[in-house]
Image (cartoon, rainbow, N blue to C red; front, side, top):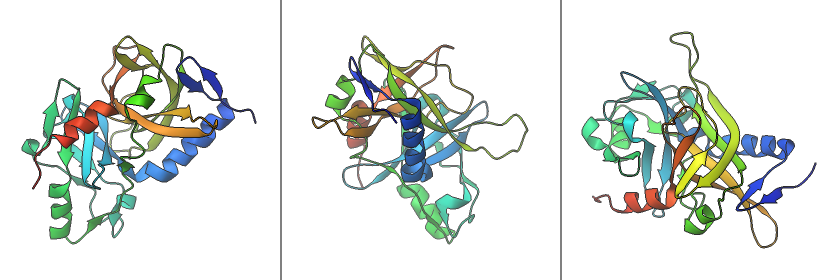
Length: 236
């Protein structure tokens, strides 16, 4: 098994290592992912725990509002205690300037307690979320990227599986991009990238939120700006 190849500003892994990273990501953040549905489209949302350990649900701004959030049996305790929730539209903080929407999880946690269950999740932690230096190292040459999402099956009513798309991430000017057109249901999903430290050890970071694409590639809302937007939310 070969090691990672350093590109200009990114790390491009060999396929076997990409498969290993994809598997590990499903183990450590699989229960952060939630399928999301609005009247007109499907997407994905995911949980982010800020530096204080406070949970927030993140997705792409066009998907926020009156959105139904699906719950796999594994994300509730007891398992399967609820199959979906529809948070109040007013609960979302929408940031069209960033392309994202943020839902503090205090309300959904309270809803669960009132109905006799609790959340059992694996949020993307603040330590896993990329900072400015990591994001700045994404360059014009492609690096390995991993998009975890709930895909959509053609048969109506079919459960939406957790999927991983192994793609490439690049920078084009100020834009961070996943260089592929992704299937229905992927918008709003977390995008992960890889980097190496001074000792050559491989590290994985959540780069940001996948935004609607142009038919050929998808912009990514970067996590340094998302983290700042979360910090601006009112507390209490």
